[in-house]
Image (cartoon, rainbow, N blue to C red; front, side):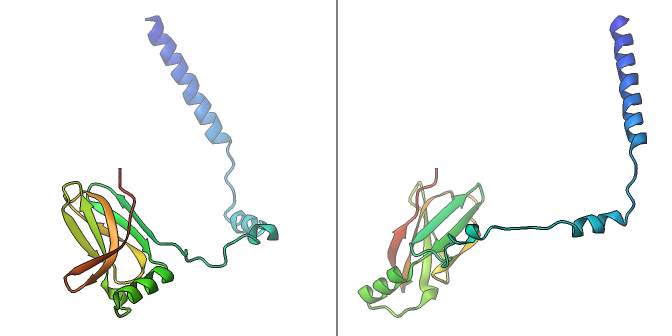
Length: 154
């Protein structure tokens, strides 16, 4: 009987304490809110902006994959040097809509994703296809010309 009495007293004290705190709070007038937001001032140091990269587009070739059970998030960028040298090497026209990302799974099954441009990103539903790595390349007719490989997913 003593533990039940102790629990009841502690509960009663906590309820009274919560009631006292809620009753003592003052409600703010509604017109105070916009006035307080106008008083805020934001300063930045110019030194922070000296070291920003003026060119936001990376000059390196990138293919990143991030996969979960049913989707793969893709991000790619082909540098202009890689694009021009590949077009020149294979004697192709500069048609960026032929860019393809080829995904491989652990059983060497493939899934081709049309990229449509030399840079971009998209989320692809793969259902039961579990991608292990990807290769970014150019598809000309039935031939696939690989440009570079992504890191393998773990």
